[in-house]
Length: 30
Image (cartoon, rainbow, N blue to C red; front, side, top):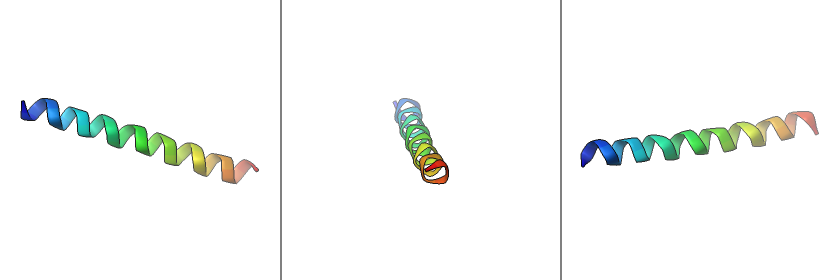
């Protein structure tokens, strides 16, 4: 059970990082 929770948290972190990166890219290229 704990392992599942950890992988879910990691997936959330990864998606948040990707969103932040895309936002930064938009700011750079605009």
